[in-house]
Amino acid sequence: MIRSSLVLLSLIGLIIAGPKSQALDNFEIEAGGFWSLVDRVDLLDPRIETNVLGAYGALWWNQTWGLRGALHRVPADHVDKAPNDQLQVDFQHRLQSPVSNSYLSAGLGWEKNRFGSQGSLSGLRLSAGGRAHLAGVVSVYGNAGWSPNLKHLGTRQDVSTISVETGLVIEPMPFISLRAAYRYHLTDYTDSVTGHDRREVTDGFRFGGGIHW
Image (tube, rainbow, N blue to C red; front, side, top):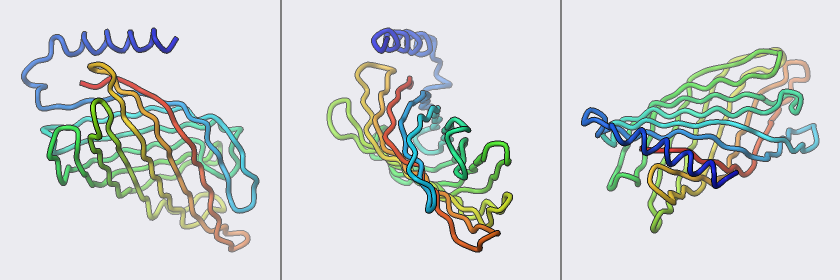
């Protein structure tokens, strides 16, 4: 199954890259999906393991300006107070790019967290990222984001989030990217009923891959 998927992704990459025009020469594009088994825990509830599925994508122009996005989806019946859907979109600028696959970046974005049937919260997000080539086809990367004010939802007051992801990118063949990473997502808020500060964490290792050109 994995081998067949890699072959299919290779064919897709070749098809896309074949008719590539000069107008696209300055663009770097990557898209893929992932699976992870995460732990979800808050201050009052026990640790719960559950599956997460998601997707990611990035578009860079001239190795300078970029648009990055990610979707993380947990089955709604596997969470209580924590968000089950997280959508993040960042507009970033590369602060340093000595080579095409090594850089530091920072920017502004938008984040939306859905809390099951209770509704969702969204707001501005500060983000930073980076990537460094290690050796051969292996690179290390990191992404971080902070949404300081997502306002209120139900009994949650003054909601804020922090997310950090770091891992390895392996490119075993042209147009194919494989990823192995660890992701940590924290949600802070004040419970309006008790007045207590609450903290909910979703963290775990993730594995995925996609195509790039």
